[in-house]
Image 1 (cartoon, rainbow, N blue to C red):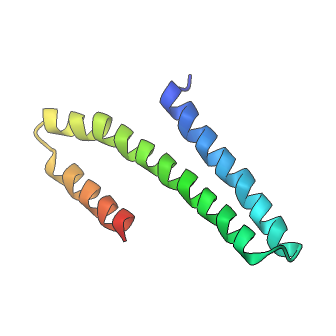
Image 2 (cartoon, one colour):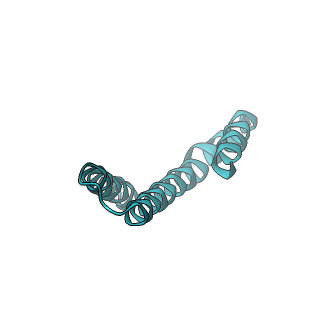
Length: 88
């Protein structure tokens, strides 16, 4: 059974996929570049939101558990790696 959080993430990703299909159609149809760019920004925002929810779930679950078991350093390194990529 999916959690509420998983459902939210899947909904964001599915919405982004639908919007991406729309962007592809816009390009194929030769639509106005600014309109296409705005839609790409909207897709990006959805993907960022989904990614943050996934990172949040990881920190509250896997990272918390690793620290409780005295093995948190690797998880911290993973989060730092993700944040480094996210902020670029």
